[in-house]
Length: 96
Image (tube, rainbow, N blue to C red):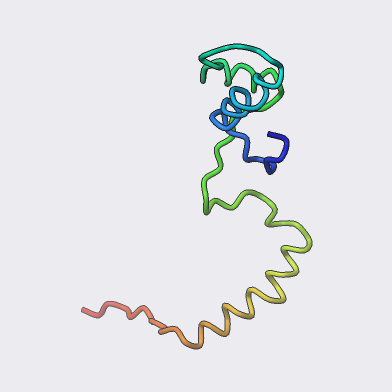
């Protein structure tokens, strides 16, 4: 359990660690182990909270100095160069 990376603790991983590693080391004889609901309560008491982060969602940081410098000096130059290989469309005015 202590070897898990930050932000990888899930209720299921925690429950497995408790039931397979921790309770047997404490010589606690509990046939069923702790339930999923109990796992959630324990995690809350230990200071964990639920957090859902979807992949592909950019979360803050776009105004950080290093990000602004990268955008100006690297990213925008690459986008400008790639624009040379893209088709350009001009909006034509409708004529009656």
